[in-house]
Image 1 (spheres, rainbow, N blue to C red):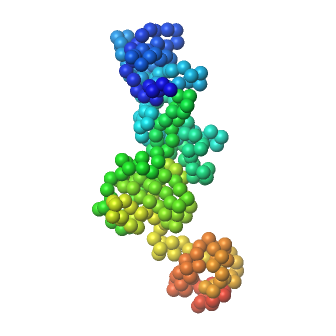
Image 2 (image 1 turned 180 degrees about the vertical axis):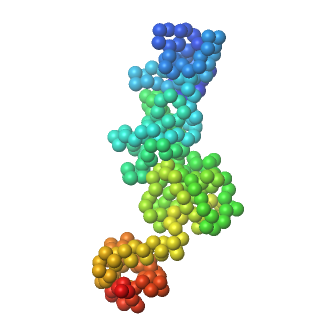
Image 3 (image 1 turned 90 degrees about the horizontal axis):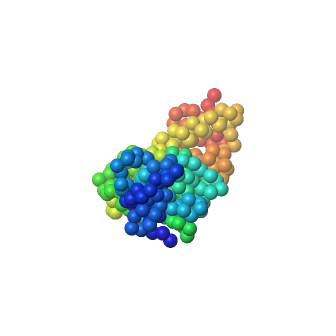
Amino acid sequence: MNTQIGTIQKMQLEEKVTDGWVLKNAFGTAFLPDENAHNIVDDDTKIEVFLFTEKDGKIKATTALPKIEVDTYGWGIVKQIDTKFGAFIDIGTDFNILLPKDDLPALESVWPVEDDPIYLRMKKDGKDRLLVIPAKEHELDDLFIDASHANLNDAVQGWIIRAGREGSVMLTEERYRGFIHYSEREKEPRLGAPVSGRVIEVKDDGTLNISLLPLKHERMDDDAKKIYAYLEAHGGTIPIGNKSDPELIKNTFGMSKSAFKRAIGRLMKQGDIKPEDQQITQLKK
C-alpha cells in the first residue's frame, strides 16, 4: 500500500508531457493531468498536490487541495446519493469521493441528501482507493465546546452528526454537543439534517439534552386543533372519549392517551365541546 495516497505532497515538476506533467519526490512519481493542474506558472519547480489512484491503479495528482487527508477528519458536502453505492462527497478537491452504502445509516429514510454537511474521516481500501466514512462518536469530541452555561429552554440550531434509532447527536451553531432521545422527536432526523430544538437538560459533563418537540402547551394547541378538525369532519360526534382504548386514540389521532386528554380538557375550557363524556366527544352546536 502506498502511504502517500490520500495525502498532500510537495513534488517536483519533472517533465511536461502531452496531456499533463510527470511529478517526482523522494517517495516516487505521480502523473498530474492537465485538467487537474490549476494555477501552475512557468517558473514553478515544486508544487503541492493531492495524490490519489484511478481505477487503473495509477497514481495521479491534483493541485486542488482537499480539506482532509487520509486518517484526518473534516467536513464534506453531499453532492449525489446513489442507492446502490452510497453518497458522493465533495471534500474540496476537483472530484467527489464515495461514502459507501454500508457506512450510511441502515434506514435509507435517514440518509443525507444533496448539500447536507457530514463530518468525515478519509481512509483507503486494500487497493489504495480513497473512501470517506462518517466520524465515529469518539472521533467527534474535538468538535465540541463546553455548554455548562446554557439555560433550559434555550433555542438551538445545528446539524445532525450521528443518526441512531435510540437517539441522535447534533452539533449546535455554538459547537455544543446535543443528544436528542428518540422520545424527543417526531421522527428520526436524517444524517446531516439542519434541525432546531430547545435545551431540556444541561448535563454535568458540559453537554446538552435537546428536544425537537414544541413545548407541552404548544403541542396541546396542535392536538386540540387536530381533534376539533376530526370532529367537524365526522358530524360533530365521535365514539372516542377519555375512557377509550389508548391504541384507538393513537391510531385515530396519532397522539398518546394523555395528550388526548389534555387536548380534550383544553377544548372544554375553550367551550368548543360539550361537558366530558367518558366514551364520546361532541362539539357544541
